[in-house]
Length: 137
Image 1: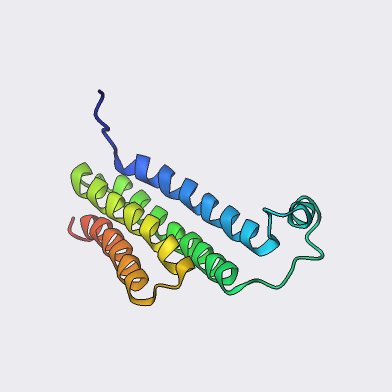
Image 2 (image 1 turned 30 degrees about the vertical axis):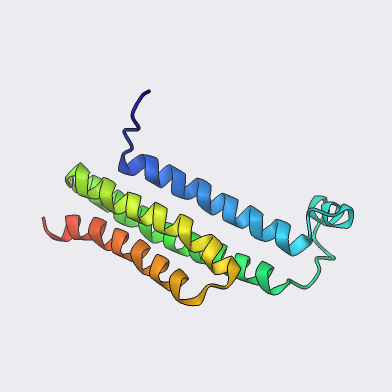
């Protein structure tokens, strides 16, 4: 069985895919996309989107937060790569960011208050690890 040799750039791509899945999930929850009427809303011009349920509103906030953090993560990673930073700490920081953000989304949608904050803080720690590689040079 081949081993996964993930790099920081793999985690960047996975994080972008995760952001897209989060946005899509938020949209499906908001439009009730699992129903016949919801499919019509999703395929339409979204003039008649229903008010969000609490879970749909949380999914939307979590997805938007991911997009905001993905911009920062991408900037830190690009700066570190351009500065020629060591690959191992970049990969560690990127993996921490990705896995923490992956945990963050269901925790936020489910309304788990303190654990979601821990996951968010871990993702921030991953970005800080990457940024530190540039600042230490």
